[in-house]
Amino acid sequence: MPDKPMLILIAGPYRSGTDGDPQAMAANLARLEAAAWPVFATGHLPVIGEWIALPVLRSAGAGPTEPLADQVLYPTADRLLARCDAVLRLPGNSAGADQDVATARRRGLPVYHDVAEIPRRTPREAA
Image (cartoon, rainbow, N blue to C red; front, side, top):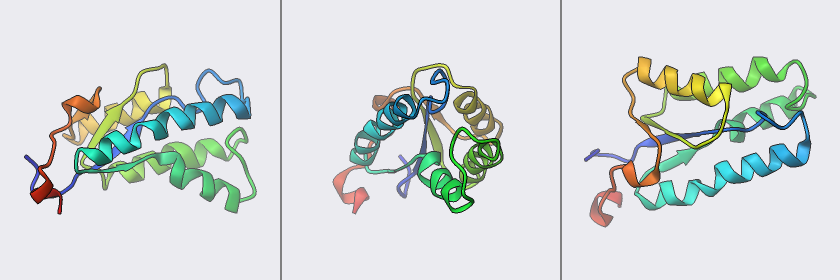
């Protein structure tokens, strides 16, 4: 059992399979965000790379389908993984999420494929 809450990166499709359609990307982000509460409920802290990368892109005057996105989205996840304790890999084809999993494994971080696999902290530990 972790002695402190883990910071868990939720990884899954965001741009993959959307052909740049903003509504499809929003739906993918909503699926990623739907996992946030279940992770939090285990006593840990969820994070999604797009929560950080998208404001960075906007501040540069760019969006997720512009060339700058590749220089922000993937490096953001890599930098986050330097701080994260684990990854929750959601289903779906995603080169970026697969890259996150590979990076996590290289760094010796656990990779979960279901929230039920995440060690639950007791209420006393979660305080």
